[in-house]
Structures are given as C-alpha cells and as structure tokens.
Length: 322
Image (cartoon, rainbow, N blue to C red):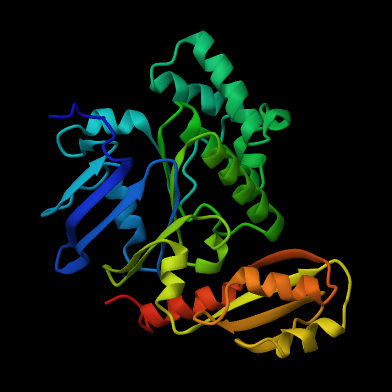
C-alpha cells in the first residue's frame, strides 16, 4: 500500500462520487473528476454551481459525505493535517490582516507553517519576486489596490512552497491589466512545476491558460477533460482566429476557395480573420499552409474563444442555482 502523500499515476486530486448538502439544499451531486500532476486545471461554472464548496472540501475546510477525495495521494479525512501543509488555498474573498505590511503578513504565515527565521527570509524574498511585490513589501496591505492585494493573497498561498494550489476566482474584480498580470504569474507557477486548480465562471478567461477543464453546473459535473476534447464534442466544425502582421486582402478569397472552409470573417479593429472549417476535411496545419501559400505573414493562429463559450453554454442551464 502506498504511503499517504505518495502521488500515484500522476494524479494529484482524485474526487469520487462526492456529495455535500447545506441543510436541505444539495450543493454537490455525486461529483467525480481528477487533476493531473503539474497541470493547470480550470474549474468552470456559473455562480452558485458548487465551485467554492468543492474547493473548500479539497482544502479540508468542509467535509463531504458520502464520497472520497484524495489529494496528493492521501485521503483528506484521515490525513487532513498533512494535506494542509502541502496545499496553498487562495479563497474568493480577501481575508488578510490589513493593518500589517506585506512583509509582516507573509512572515506571520510562514512562521505559522513552521519555517525557521532563515527559511522565512529567503522564502519571502522568493515569493515577493515571483509576484512582483518586492518594491511594495513595506506597504500596509490596507493601502494597496485590489490587484496588489490579490498578489499578496497569492504570495501567502505560496509561502510554504505547496505542491498544489487551489485558487477560487483569483481574477474576480480585477481590472484588465491586473487580470493579465495574474494569469502570467500562473503560467510561471506552472512552468516551475506547481499543480494549479483554478475556478472561474468565465471559460474564455482560462482558454489559453489551462490544459484541462472541469465544468460544473448546479452541483453536477457536465464535462471533465481536455479543452480539445470539449470542443470535439461540439459539432462538425471548428473556428480559429488567424492574426497577421499586416493586412493582406487576397487572403480571404484564397481561404474561401479552399475546400472544407465554411466561413471566413474579418474581425473588426484587428488584422485578423475568423476561419471556420469542417474538422473531417481540414486540419489546422492545412489552413496555415493555405494562408502562407496566399502570401500572408501569420503571427498567431489560435482557437476562437467564442466557440468555447458556445460549448459552455450548451452544457450549462439558464437561470440560477437550484
């Protein structure tokens, strides 16, 4: 038998038939999904779908019954203390000691995790650099913008060097620049080997970030797997955006005459085209080759996030939670 904490088959989170109720209201209906090691896994659903409840269960703050949940190879009910030391949880609400400076806050939580004075000093320097907060370390948290406070919250979740990050709507309420900067930090965390489970109610926000996604609606899992797999279930066509470094009028006609391409639309205020094609007739390589043969200089070619939104809407129901 594996020791608690051993990661088997590269699975960091393994949820099986998990159920949870708030008095008479069932919040989770026998949900099951897995999160792979070193992945950036999106957890997506409308408001009230059960995302925060699930994250609190994974963080050992709520106990589900019935069902099983293994985190980092350990059953969270029997090994909750060990699990807490190896996860970093960033809740959806900012709950920090606002009268502290950034450094004081991080030092307090690092000490709570048992790090020595020397360990705390180096670790805090590292997480401040990672979150680009070194120049603000002596500022009072209450004087920071929401975007800066979100960075402190992320730094706090990282201060004990966890293996798994559980992030509940980390980009909520941020302006566009702060949102982009946060997503870049998450990419860097994945690059250095962290496993990240991140919730959001906006699928398109995670489309270029995640390698896997789980969609939940009204406490039920509607889909879990890769983004490619999600789109493969949605019809016979795919849509991609082809971005150019300069306008090239002949491109549209060249694409429209390519067998298998069903629609070519110029995007407003962009040097780009939305290309829709039959997946059984063409591959993305075929379209790129056609664009290059037409003399276009391509700078980006990526899935149109609007099609992801279509898939999300098809899987979820209108209206609020039950």
